[in-house]
Image 1 (cartoon, protein in one colour):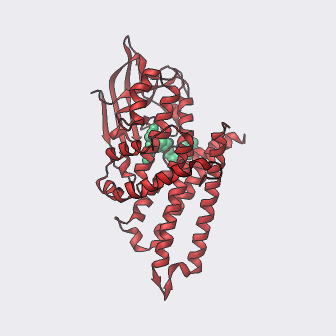
Image 2 (cartoon, rainbow, N blue to C red):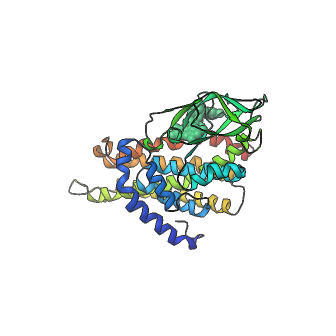
Image 3 (cartoon, rainbow, N blue to C red):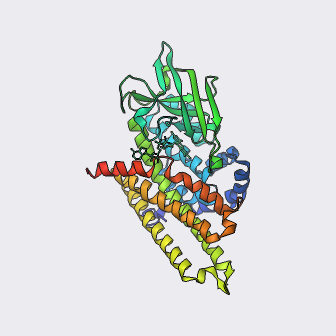
Length: 368
Ligand SMILES: Cc1cc2nc3c(=O)[nH]c(=O)nc-3n(C[C@H](O)[C@H](O)[C@H](O)COP(=O)(O)OP(=O)(O)OC[C@H]3O[C@@H](n4cnc5c(N)ncnc54)[C@H](O)[C@@H]3O)c2cc1C
């Protein structure tokens, strides 16, 4: 828990924990079976003050919300609270905030951040989507893919090339309502995270007014990096807490499962494995807290955040994977929570930056 530097937030954590336990967890299996993002529940989350721009509270929500047992839902909510909303708050004009941010915070609208393309994921400079200046504004053409929440979004924050400069320059962000006929969105079927409504977006001569640009022209790379930093930081808090929850649940299973005349938790091989996982999660948690504290105080912790994306996410993924092994056959069954967690966990080292890219970034910081 972050209580060592957030004592004033105890009551809020207790409120979120209770809402997650009683208001969300009993429903999450239904959303997962239906493979649907529950929009009415998102509105309820907003009513419960879970969609906000308060950074400390969002840290608490990041730790508590995944315990609803739908990581897809939790990650979708984090995209709204820790990516879409802060980008609108920091970069939006008064009119853009009124049109998009206020309804988002009330749970009435959802956004998606569309950067990745079929031929440009890790390699941001390879972006192909083009925004051409017209007399009335901009005309966009291109394809975005793997976009979280695309299939349920009301609007997109989308990166496109506005200037013929090669590399990381010459790209800008746009706010695009999805209602237009020139925006077509196809839901994508994934290995896990079924409730996150990921999709592919095709823009065909999509005309938008001049005031649709978000922030300054040519600054998309810097804006997206700053947004990704925040997403990786809050995602680190979330995935470690979620893996701990998975491990705690697994330990209860081990204490009740008999074999060879005792319960599984009495075998040294298993006790040591659980002790090892607890230790690695604690190390990851402390790395997260260290960066989170620095970030709250306004320090530049980008290197530490890359380390979180590298170490904490991998640790969470491997703990969840081991939970399946510790359950034996039942953990491999399709409908068992453990096999679903395992599928969801696989995305942790792909979405929002891979370990290979994080190592490259850390190496740059280390000047090696
Ligand atoms: C569940 C999920 C949700 C997502 N949500 C969003 C979203 O909301 N918005 C969005 O814009 N994108 C989203 N993405 C896309 C995601 O950010 C990209 O998939 C990710 O950045 C990797 O890019 P890529 O898929 O193009 O893989 P590639 O860049 O093609 O990489 C393929 C493999 O090659 C490795 N690789 C690439 N370059 C190097 C290198 N220089 N050195 C060593 N290895 C390298 C990678 O690490 C990876 O293992 C999501 C993806 C997933 C799976």
